[in-house]
Length: 342
Ligand code: UFG
Image (cartoon, rainbow, N blue to C red; front, side, top):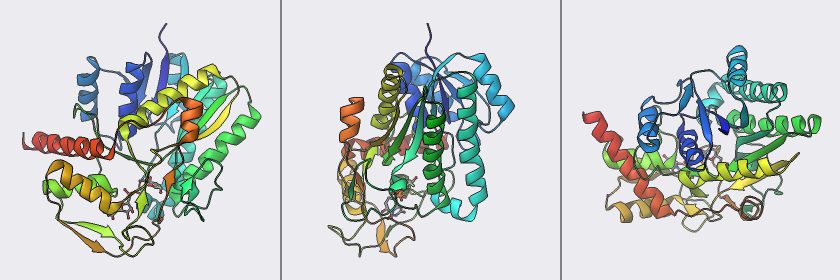
C-alpha cells in the first residue's frame, strides 16, 4: 500500500530535497505547491533524480476548499508542512502578509488533519524561536525561547504554540516541531537546489552568486562581534541531511501514538561567516570578492544546536560537512549559470 505524505511547499528548497528523501525511503510524497515562491524547473530536477515525476497538486495551502479536496483525494499517513514565506527582512515591511499566509496555512493543515483523522505532522520551525540566546550559545530544546526579531520569526513561534495547543485538545495526534538551523548546500546531482527570488538574503547563495559574477561583492555584516574572529556564528546544516531528518521524524511519529515533540536539527557545531568564506575559497578554488560592512539589524551574535535529542529520539545526526555544502552549493550555482546561457 502506498504511504502518501502530503508535502506542502514541496517545490521549495527544503521541500524538494525532502521529496527525494521520502521516495528513497519508501514513502509516496504528494507535492503541494502553488509555485508562487518556487521555480517550476524543480519539477524537471525531481523527475531526473526520481526517474518519474512526483505527484503534484497546485493548490494554495491557505485555500480551504482546495486543501480539503486534496485530503479527500488521498489517504495520507502524514503531513510535512513547509509552505510558508521565509524572508526575514521582507516580513518586517509586510507583517500581515506573513501572519496571514504562515498562520492560516498551518491552521488549514491542522483543521484538515483533525477532520480527516490524519495523525502525523512535521512542522518546519526555526532556531529563530531562541532569539539571541542568553549565556550559552549551544541551545537545547529546553533553552528558553526569546522573542524573535521579525514577524517571520514570530510566525514560527506562534506556529509552535498553535501546534502545542492543538495537541492538548487532540492528544491522539502525533505532532513534531523541527527547529532548523541554517540550511545550506544542494543535491549532489545538481538537479535541485535553492532558487533565491531576487537578491538573496542568506549567506551561502550570496557567496555563490558573487563568485559566479551575478553579484559584485559580498558584504560581511559586522566584524566586531564577541566571537573568535568578530563575525557571527551559525550552525550550517546540509539540506540533504536536513531532508532526511524529516523522514526519521515521520517514522518516529508513526511508531509513537499521541506524541508532541520539538527537536533541533543542526550539526551541533558553529561556524563563523569568515570560516564559511574560507571553506568556500579553499574547496572551490574560487576567489571571493568580499569586504566587511556594518552589522545587519536583528542578527543574532552566535547560536548553534545541541543536536543530542535528534540523535537519541530520531536516530538522526548530520553526516555531510561544510566542505560538502560549499562544493554542492557551488556546483548548483554553476549549473544554474549554464542553464541561463542556453
Ligand atoms: N551574512 C553576511 N552577509 C550576507 C548575508 C549574511 O555577512 O550577505 C551573515 C549574517 O550576518 C549572519 C550569517 O551570515 O551572520 C548567516 O546569515 P543568513 O541570512 O544566511 O542566516 P540567518 O542566520 O540570519 O537566518 C537564518 C534563516 C532564517 C531564520 C534565522 C534564525 O535564514 O530563516 O536563521 O536565526 F529566521
